[in-house]
Image (cartoon, rainbow, N blue to C red):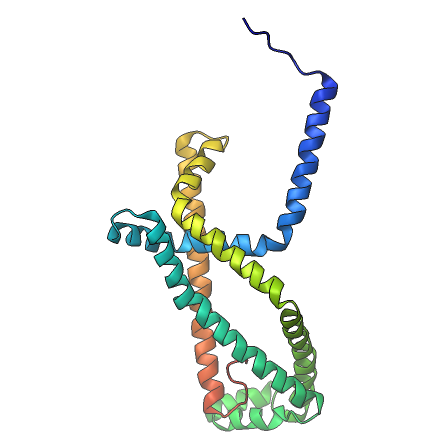
Length: 245
């Protein structure tokens, strides 16, 4: 009969210390990719129904279903987001140069907007003190300079760290693929490790997923509607950089 040796207190202390150091080192290495990992988890949760639909259409082939779902995410979400982001950065840099040279005349644009409003709204605006366009000019110019300087710095920083940004993007797609393919198994293992009974763990995970989906859907829909209406409004009054604003 084989005897089992009980580790001593020094051995246990050394093991726990080694485990803590390894965990800290792993966290240090993975920290630059924390945002990519978070967005990968959120994308996998949001597009899990799409992946299940793909899985049913592809006769249960998980790899092909995950690849197809990832292509849909690229075409429907990531590519438009990158295109809009490029337009926003370009318009931000243009306005920054104009504002820096002192050529940004916000008062004339606000005057155009007010001139196209109903008479009742014009009276309300004038009564609230926002009819003085010289004050608006000073405030808007200051805000534009401060805000766009931050945007310009961020754009230059992203351009300077192009390789790092591309690597983080690739890691996010890589993790999203495996979460789409093996998400149900990973979710089942996570629920098994929770210190709860199976019913409570199932209810907790279902509520967590439902809240995430509702929050993201609400934020995206509201953001798209607000952005679209704002862009149309600025475009009607010939306001420059309508997409950015």
